[in-house]
Image 1 (tube, rainbow, N blue to C red):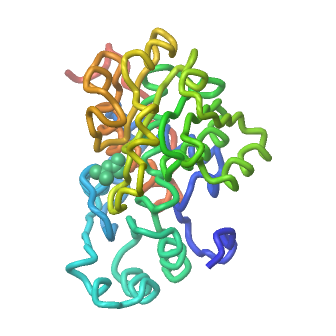
Image 2 (image 1 turned 45 degrees about the vertical axis):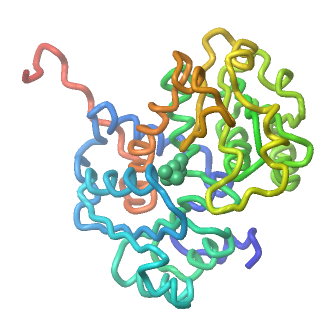
Length: 329
Ligand code: CP
């Protein structure tokens, strides 16, 4: 199924950041921030009461699984989990049939899968919204938490500089999408053998995105507001020959961080491998925002779920904070 057949897809799917209007992405983050502050949008403390989310995992997860399950429960709904090995997916039932059946039970489907084609097949057959919980190509839910985290630490991301050091993988692709949709500069330092997809870079540049790709980490990181990296070998992949050797010069250590702005933050979507893509001194150090980033998966998922599952009212403005004088203690 070609990637650009979005017009054939029904429902309000959260498939990738490049498919969603920037204003909607921003409102999802506003919704997430309102809940995080304990100020849910007016009249919407449990807006997903009575709704259910199915989560399909073809690959392992800690953060995505826990944060989605808790997010929908905290919004009043419920979640069920299907894993490949313990469902009929593992015995050959098609993705399309699974989508048709789940659409009769639940109000949205989140899927983590090995191939983007499976996500698109699911979305084409489902009659409820489908959420991309990671594919071989992208990880858009993670980027919503990442932008939220950046802004909590550094203020508005528009016009700021993020440096990526490492493999031009699925996270790098979602960072490119985010740079265009949220209007920041992204400098990717990648080994020439592991660049981000050329079509994604071309897509960004055609939209005026400020995306730079270099093999030179120092050049990418110099003066950046944020430095990001990811594991050298994504889960489920066998280590391609020489990948560790190619990525060793892209390790984020204290010297690399010292080239960024003095108040730059470090982000990592986790899980991390200390001593490989990042040193312990950086990820456990004062510039690390990795733990806020992990927490924000929970909050960001709420904005995504609300956008998908309550299109009629998800964008309601947050309730006003009661004045201190009149507030109950
Ligand atoms: N970052 C992330 O997606 O974590 P999990 O693989 O634990 O879900």
